[in-house]
Length: 112
Image (tube, rainbow, N blue to C red; front, side, top):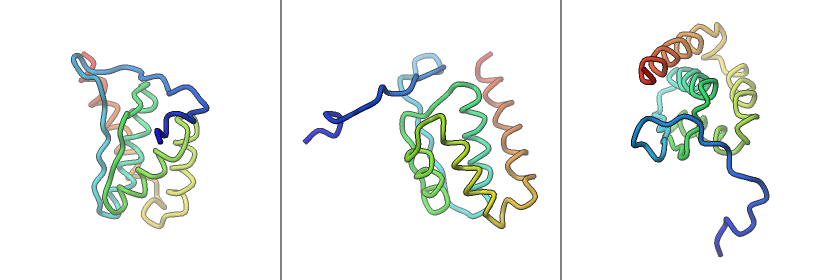
């Protein structure tokens, strides 16, 4: 049975894509504190209007991937914030802010 048969909502807007790029995959690795960076990277992508077509990960990356894939685009950041606000790794918030700024710079330079 095709899972798409029972789709009840329209797929999200694809947003911006690099030239000659049909799909965007977000692959997240494991490693505790890296998860906070991953949340910041997703935030920067989301704010730039770039939603991944595919998301996968290992260890903490798999948890972030599940949060992203398991929620509608408009709810993903809130759910990541809820998860990371309860995480001891993200108590200061510095890691995620640094990652978000770095990701925004990278996205901006890729578009020019």
